[in-house]
Image (cartoon, rainbow, N blue to C red; front, top):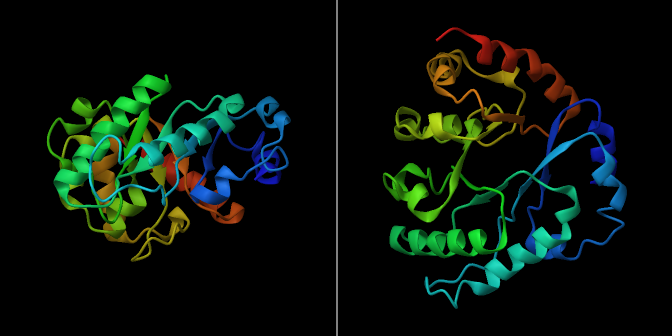
Length: 231
């Protein structure tokens, strides 16, 4: 992780600190997150684990272990001063998911002063949580373009949520969740994006969620064209 951050410093403005695996990331030491990372010319946001120990029932006490893990992770990376955090919706039926997210939003506001953003995923397009739910729960929105296209989330695309996203993750899905270069968008996907991008907030941060440097470099001019296209 530290080696990747040092490589990216000076090449990009912002990086995502991907804390994808709960137990492994809780075990990080200063060898993994050395103090000098804070001195790099980078802006950070953090992606919280996919495998937080969410409960089957939505009670506040039941979800406390998952939220305590989140707090431990945020304490571990506090020196990097991330400007926001991204989370996937917990598993479960709609009612359970909503209640867990309400608890998460309350806990977050009590312990953090940066936004917590909910990302659209294969299992939850966020729109399905209901109109006004994010505001009620005190959550923001991270739009994952690869998920939007790869999982054919047309209702999300047509909703007001994309215009409210404060962070946008970019990759080409290639028919699945491939995190491929933007040069691999299909003509049909480019047509959909030509309609979508003028609706995105001018204040949103954009991150290429692509895990190969060559593919990321190839994607930069594609992203620039998409974002500069007239409305």
